[in-house]
Each structure stands twice: as C-alpha cells, then as structure tokens.
Length: 378
Image (cartoon, rainbow, N blue to C red):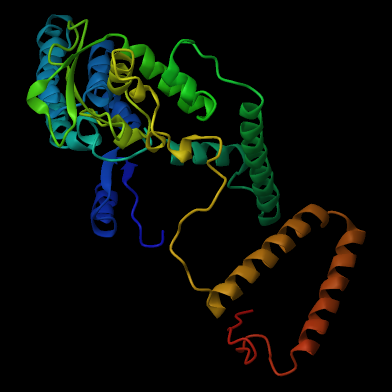
C-alpha cells in the first residue's frame, strides 16, 4: 500500500495471524473480531442472555479503562454469583476462558479502540461478506470455463449494486427527524444516508446529557465542558470532557469518536447545541474538518494524493498484459459456446499473431525486446 500501514486490522484469535501482524504491520492496531468472540462465548457454554448482554456492553459502549474495570467486576457478579442458583456456575473451563479474554481486553473493548481510526468497524465483516458473495456464485466442482463465467457474473452483480447505491441517494433525501437542528441540516445533503443515520442516532442520544463548564481544565485557550448522563442508573461513572476553541471552531471529546469513526459524537453535538444557542452562535457553523470526504456523496470525485510512482518498463508491460488478458478472457467466456464465433476468433488470433511477429522481426517470444527495454515472458 505504497509503504503506508492500515490504522487497524481485525482478525480472529489465531496465534499465527497475530504474530504475522506484529512482524509485518508493527504500527497497526490489531483488534479481535467481536463476531468470533461472541461465537467462542457460546461454544464455551456462556450462552445465556444476561451474560451476552453484559459482554456486548463491554465490547461497544465503554470509553475508558476505568469503566471497563468497573463493569467487568459487575459482569462477574451479575452473571455468576447471582445466577449460580440457576445452574450457571463459574466452572474451571469458563474461568480459564474468561481470564484469557481479560488478558487481551485491549484488542476487543471499545475503551482501547478510541485511539485508532477504524471507520466504526469492529469485526472482519468485509472479509466475511466477500466470502458470502463468492459462495453464492462459485463451487468447487466448476470447470475453469464455468468459473470464469460465474466470476464475471459476480463482478457484474457487484458493479450493478454499486451503481444503484450511487444513484438512489442522489434522488432521495434522508428523513430528518430533528427538523429544527441547524447542525443536522448541514450534514443531511452531504453525508451518505448510512452515515447520516449514524449522526442522527448520535444526536438523539445527545439529549440525555447535561452539560456544565469545567473551569479547571482550560488548556491552550480551549474551554472545557463536562457532560453527565441525566439517567445515571446504568453508568454511574459516565463523564465526558469536551474541549472547545471558539475561534478555530475546534471541538475535542474525551470519547474520541471522531478520531476512531470519522463522525461527531453525541457529546460534541450536545455541546454545540448548548453553546450555539447560549451565546456562541459561531459554533453552530460546523468546520469542514469535521466532514470527512470519505463519508460524503463526493467520495469518488477529485484527486487522491498517493505517492508518485514512476512507470518503469516492467510496470507498463504488466499493465498491458493485465488489460489484454482481461479483455480476451471476457470475450472468450461470453462467445465460445457458439461454433462459428469460436472459429472466427481462432482464425483472427492466428492472423494477429503472424502480424505481430512480422512487426518485431528481431524478437522471438520469450526473449527481451531491445526497442522498449521490457522483458516478455509469453
């Protein structure tokens, strides 16, 4: 990837994969797939509903390490001490599995993920989705010719789905639940429907927070505000700090959702509403730094700043081979069922081969070309 490592990679708990990531991607955050953890939970006998709910809370809803320690102890108390009379005992096997899970907590709990950008992903869903689509089209008993037919059908279906996904949002506007929100109105025509749905969900949850100034945390000219949930029954230690720079319109939250997902969190949205309508109207105008292009309808447009790569003779050669091979494979798989078309193509290929060899009399296939400096491996 042009020498750039990904910010985060999610896999199952295979030791070989973990060792490979530590060696090849030393600066990449290695997280564990939450889907595989849930499946392992059930295979170890921890299948009852209260435990799965508690584990899900530990995976997705925590934002600090102190919170994790607090709720991990609460989980053990709620799911084993209180459930023991129902036959759900903490056996040695379960205890060993939980201890191992606790050791790698930094790889699966949201309390540690906030420092790593992962687009909101927590599992190997991209790989699993790709495998699922491949299984719909491909089978082990397919011949090579049938494989190319089915693979081309798969590509056409994916491209059609992508075009449809690009077309539909351009002709519809997401439903705006909070019609009076000046903040959401700035995102509704820019973000894709899925991302705007995430934003609107965060905004709906922001209403549950109470905000007040925190004068002890004035750092670098930024004003600090402390947020607490109005309902403290579920999370009594829930406290977030939002730092605000009114001049630069800069907002930083201790939960770091923007840093890890790319969209503003409920705490920042609550602060914007509270401050915007409370004497700082300039803060209602969201700075463009908080609207990532990757989540907008213009994600595919414009230039992508990648390191410049010089076209060598070998690179040009590989590009040409890839283009011609793809075109010929597609033509062959679509037309070779017809005898007349097959004969026509066969005769045409022989004629092209003779003509190409006559244009390059000094070169035989398998030897380097002195005219271009490229090597041919045909």
